[in-house]
Length: 574
Image (cartoon, rainbow, N blue to C red):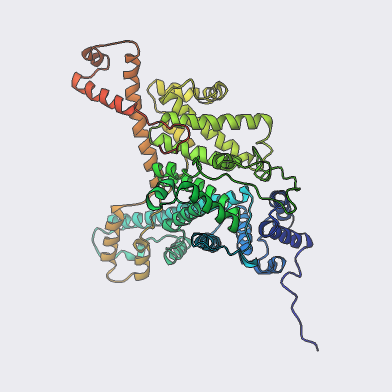
């Protein structure tokens, strides 16, 4: 009897799936044809997903490796692409979230090792060309942005999951400790009635405790900064102080690195700046959030040159992909500045404008925030009217983001009225939607906080909790000494009981405290507008305060109404 020979790994794969893998590998590693990759990424992949893998994982990388010649870098990209799909159609468990970290760590290590080795060769003056194993890489701008956007999104989700899980366990332990103390009064061991968190919560805590390095904020930030350096070069300030080379030679070296490693690294570098700005905003470091966008607004940076198709440009590429609002055509109709390139990808443009505006708002740069939001609101309003944004696959997200932008404009228009920044059509929509809440604020009621709660991002805390506070008592178990252990646990829990929303509430409190000051100053400004000059004593009487208090209020008003404003052609942080 003949031995049974197992079929090859790809024997059961559908033919269209094999063709998709082969063609996607070809466009990313060999031909670098934007139009072909656009069809594969925006049309073929969603079609195959809905037909074969609507709620199930795609085949493993090993199963499709023969279709790409075992290209490890492409297989890492394939793993991220398919894992991203599974993350959106299922509710990830704690192990799924940690597995997601492994996927991104493996992909980013390979990408950065490749481009950093190329950069080292260029710096050393090497003229050796890449061999077949180190072929250049091309990814659509949309694909590059999606990778980094999902990376930050999964980090945000992991931090929220970790904080919420630990908070739920801590509250259970604390409430049980309080009830034991009230019932026992100090008598003999009540350890038998002590509550513990549910088994699935305890299991999640154990997994999190065993993988403390998963999604560490230091590693996440390091990856993004390395992508920025690889794709955009060193910051101008660093170049000026550490290198004697001129900006022109630095740009030449960067162009040489991108030419050898692949245009994908230029894309990844610029979108890493956008992702880094978003991450810093979520962490509450608003100055760093604006500073991260420096490469995007660098007017001295090299232009993004489209890939040249084999055969000298006969390929009629019409743009960088299926995103709405793609102007100029990254694929072949002209080079773009970094800012124009980022704006050519609609989700990236919205993310940049939204998080930069939040940072401006929290730094009291109200005119800059209004200008940034007014521009993106006008763009989105026109996109909805023409139907471009409504035809986009992300149209639902665009609608929600547009509502948040209008709420932020309502706040800014009330705190710092401006009539020359935002188009009247946008402000008319803002007044129609939020006039009731603004009238409440004018009458002395609360209203700013509700608008901000609706419009702000979900701020996160990247701190790793002390899991031993929850896990140690469970490991030690009951016994005669349970009374002392319970007392210690109760004392520790009383010191700081997390709510799972601490970072979020901290930023909201910071905003509301600033708005309370602005509300106090609004009455003062209303009186000052009525007079060309007024005596301090009279103004103090109008405001029902003593002259000494009014002087302090006037100094506060001078400080709070002084704003740093960005000039055209410079970084957002200046």
